Length: 174
Image 1 (cartoon, rainbow, N blue to C red):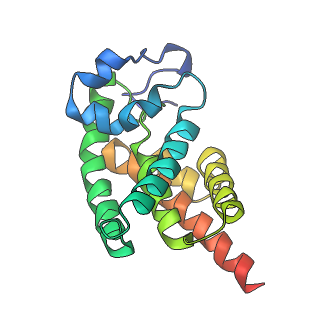
Image 2: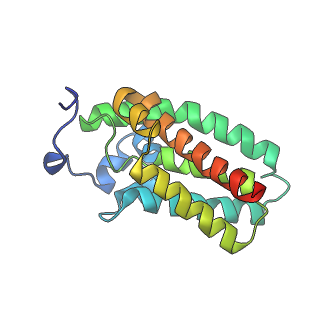
């Protein structure tokens, strides 16, 4: 049974740059356009997160320190609750595929804990995060199905980030 505010996947409303630019919440929720990709928008949002983390951390290392990244991630999570709630309401779908701010914040959190790291380690972090976000093993699936609104959109990706980091911790312990 589908939630009352969700449409079947075949009837999801179309999104566009015009829609994204119509409200600041949409710009954020749709990952500055990365969520508008017609193919795998969640993966595109995660790639945007990886790219932006690298650019900001490399270009302005004194500004984008681990402590500052922590603050950015916490603030981004809280603002993301609002942005995803508003965007979902305007789209008529609580967790539309074009909303990728949740992937961005969650993957920034993953990168915060695994870097500095080689490109190979970062690639594994990316692949593991995408696996947990797409497959949604329990309890991620539970949160995805039962928590709605902006908090629900943001929370299941934070849990996917936690599983990614837990996998890294277990891998390093072995």
